Amino acid sequence: MEEFPSIEVQGLSKSYGRVPAIHKLSFQVNKGEIVGFLGPNGAGKSTTMRILCGLIPGSSGSARICGLSIARQAESVKRCIGYMPENNPLPEAMRVREYLRFRGGLKEMPRRTLRRRIDEVLEICDLHYKTGRRVIGSLSKGFRQRVGVADTILAEPAVAIMDEPTIGLDPHQVLAFRDLIHSLRGKMTIILSSHILAEVERACDRVIILNQGRIVAQGTSEELRREFIRDSEYRFTLRGHGAGVAEAVRRVDPAARLSDPMPAGPGGDGAVAVRIESSRTSDMSESFLQAIEQVPGVHVQAFFRREPSLEDIFLAATRRSWKETEESLGRSTVRSVAADATARDL
Amino acid sequence: MRHFGVLLRHELRALFIAPSTYIASVLFLLLMAYVYYMILESYIGAEHDVSVAETFFKIFWLPVFFMVPLLTMRSVAEDRRAGTLETLMTTPVTSLEVICSKFLAAWLFYVTLWGITLAFPFLVIYGMGRPGLTESLLDPGILIGGYGFVALSGLLFVAVGIFASSLTRNQLVAGMLSFSILFILIVGMPALEEHATAWELWLAEPLEFLKVFRHLEDFSRGMIDTRPIFYYLSNAGLVLGLAVLLIDSKA
Image (cartoon, rainbow over all chains, first blue to last red; front, side, top):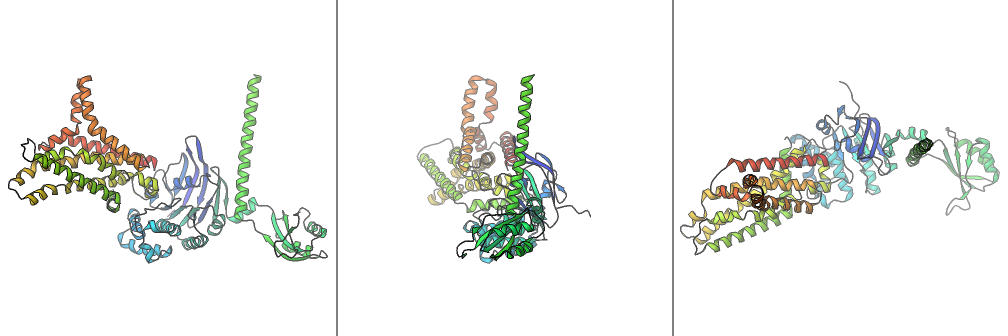
């Protein structure tokens, strides 16, 4: 039997009137992958997710879930997905178990297995016995999010789509959510969007960064780091800083940039913090350390190589896409000004 | 219509646990009991051509104006406002199933409430125990015709309420809209017919058939005409169809 990717999107666009929400998105998510959607507000994350769920049609392009066309086989597609929308709307007056039973019925789950599966998802989502019997309206934000996740994975869908599932959760709940996503790894394909970048980095195998309706970057965190963050950053805490430090650093890497020494913070005991930026891709920690330690009167208290976080990658990717947009707008403005001038000359 | 049963059970349950349903029910029964009492009082010591039941059914419009909007205004509007309609539409459920389940649940509730008013003549007969009351209060022809009309016209009225609720996410707007459409249907048609007779004679006859009061009179007399049946069924279908389209386009 032919194995299809879980999600296959080709040149997908969506416009609301004249306003484009997403523009020619193309990406693929393989079976069992956990993919994070990142992007500033209005980037098109929710629109893409809503199209993938069959809630709204795309304006052009194609999207397939498990090999099924969303436009032509919407009903079959809905049998393959579990969706948790942003803000996770739930009926306030229903009890948790009752709600899951209702949703299981709608998702065509056989009655015989429904009860067992509800017990399972309550267990997975840490909704113990008492919570299962509580009215949804009386639950805290964290518990409500868990109910949303329980509903999403209830029918064991091939693809689970979660729009901002960690929104409004406290750090403990975010940790619990991360464990929950890890427990689902391999069982289903998961797409989730989040504003908590560190969370996406830890939970997801791959990241897709959207900005202004376009994909500006996609890949694993490592791939994105290589693409967007060229410089490595080394941080040293030194006692007795002198001009010799800069010389020592330049002996190792003449192109390295050294920041001005800053007080290392309260309790630093006169120590200073120095930041070195090097464009070399290999790890230069050892070489810098040896060179600085040889400077007379300087003692290295601490040092580490700072790994660029997903936040840095996100900022670099979105900045680059804005710059590209501005440039293309600039070009078109120049073109239109030139055209106007030509028209006047004529 | 695979999920219809699940949705209908859910809708009925939602109706039975909502406080607004009980408020509407109590108001309806109190109002109808008061009206029935007033009719009985006006019949004491005076001869009347029409029976108590016939007079009672003539005020069917009074509860329709507040019951139907109260019963239906939250059905789609609240789901849309809360976002639960969106989660519903990501399951293999069709919008036709969603609308039909909401409609049938509200209609069953409406008919049940009217059904409870059947207890009024029984209570009077039991309470007063006078001979001859049974024949005058429990005329089966009038009761079957009257309740048949209520059930049949209820199809259209409830469908209008569901349609109004699917137009907006604001319950209050849905309720007012539903009231306005029902007002035009019940009160506006006779007024239009009166004016139409003066302007365009050919319009008078078709408008005469659209008069809800005329249908009631026919049914109360035991005259079962297929035209009103077709009118209510086809228009209820049309209005529900529009609601389905609205759900599809605005989900």
